[in-house]
Length: 152
Image 1: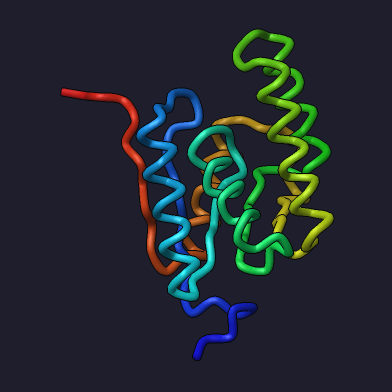
Image 2: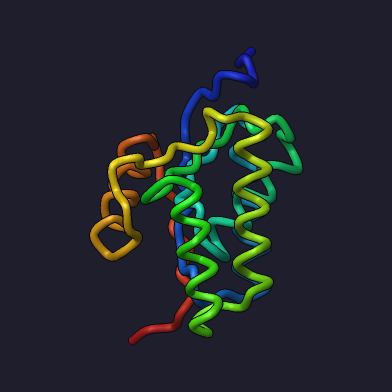
């Protein structure tokens, strides 16, 4: 039997941070439950919506966050300031920013090793997000991507 503190595989959960739906949230949560029930672990990028749904569901099942890895493009302090700035700019709501920050701070308190901060990057931009995404992929055995926006 797999030791639940050592996942047998790491599964990345990815998708839109800007737009979501109730169905996508249900699908993400069901996927996370399935992965964790099979002894796997979850990897995310610590963003809004798909990432935060996956993180929330993981916390419900594994409050100690032993089967969770969250890669950030910067330190949590810089990342938090970035989200607060985006709220002031009206890109996201203040509630969204504060809820995400609180979630990430909870994970860091529960298991400091679950939050993987990039201590080199001093800003959050497309380049540092790309680096973060590559870190998520490198740390994962599988990737589940949730398509949110209909496209042609």
